[in-house]
Amino acid sequence: MKKILLIGTALLFSSSALFAQSGNTMSGSDCRIGIKAGVNLSTIRYSGFDGATLLNDVTKQNAGYNFTVFGDFGVGNNFFIQPGISLQNKGTKLEGSFDLGNNTVTGTNQTNVMAIEVPINAVLRIPTGQAGALQISAGPYIGFNIDGKSTVTVTDGPGSELGKQENNLKFGSKSDDNLSSTDFGANFGLAYRLNNGFMFGGNYGLGLSNLVPKDNRDGNSSKAANRVIGFSVGYSF
Image 1 (cartoon, rainbow, N blue to C red):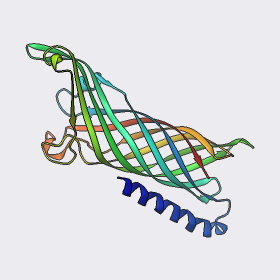
Image 2 (cartoon, rainbow, N blue to C red; image 1 turned 90 degrees about the horizontal axis):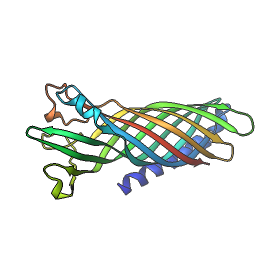
Image 3 (tube, rainbow, N blue to C red; image 1 turned 135 degrees about the horizontal axis):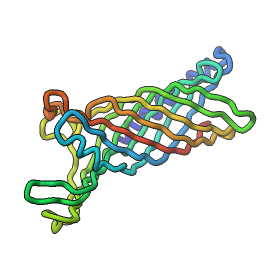
Image 4 (cartoon, rainbow, N blue to C red; image 1 turned 90 degrees about the vertical axis):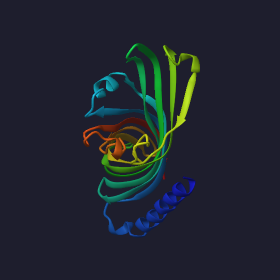
């Protein structure tokens, strides 16, 4: 994972140098490298199978974090292309009571997933005088799930005597895998960048791929997709 992040960072810096060399040919453009980090509030939404509505009803937001290194390359007046490489902590949390035939179980099942994402956003910058500029962004991303853990805690009913149970997640397309290994979707963001380089903003990640492993899909109708609300602060230079 560290090697992937280092390679991605090196590529961004190399791209920055190339854009800087050609910057004089792009009217009103510039280029920057930046970092940002913050908090994710994520869920997984389910559809296409019996029990999907119940799962969605007991789904709560799972708190995680995000860290991104990005390039900010001008291609025209106040219009930029922003590729990056990002470490995203996603997942979901199920919390409530579940009917298991003769017994009712109350507890939580928290899923944490670590993913490396490669987003490419188009950014429209709207200057607001001497203070800075509003930034509106949108674009696709592809993600690779690299690590994860499921934590089950039963507070009432059978299993409550076991305490907290943790299991490592498996990613792939087989029937014994927990989630698919890849994810793709779209990001939509709104941020404000001060003229001194500091920025803050929010992002919504709309997962478009199916996280249910291929061999576990019921007639290809069973679906699960990421939904992520992210907040971050950063600096570009």
